[in-house]
Each structure stands twice: as C-alpha cells, then as structure tokens.
Image (tube, rainbow, N blue to C red; front, side, top):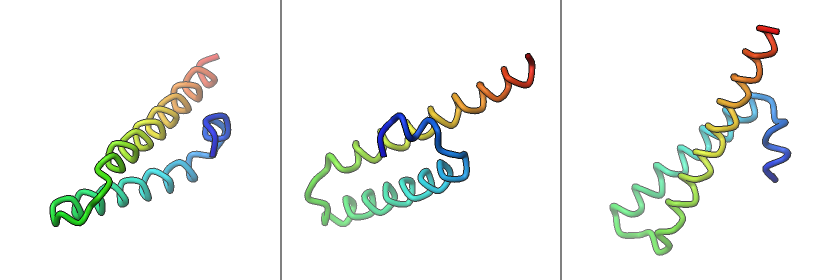
Length: 70
C-alpha cells in the first residue's frame, strides 16, 4: 500500500495494520533473542512502518479536530 492510500485509509484499517506490525515486531525481537533472526534490518523496517502508521493516525485526528472547530 502506498503512502497516498494510507492517508485515505479508515482508522479501523490503520488500527489493524498497527496491531499486525506490533505483533510482527514482537516476533522479530523474540527471534533475535533466540538468535534465529538472520536479517536484523527487518526490525528497523517494521519499526518505521509502525511510526508511519502512528503518524498518519495522529494527522487524521488533528484533521478531524480542525474540521469540527470550523
């Protein structure tokens, strides 16, 4: 999903994506602790995905607040 589509996603979809990515991050960290993770950059990529989703969710809430104030 491109960044343009993410900005238009309903908040329910974003919450689902956030939960999936947080679960994936937890699994990657567990694999790392068990020394089964070969590509350590996966952790960094998932953390960035989580940050992007949280940013989009925050922007959406700010847009909703400004729309209700006007």
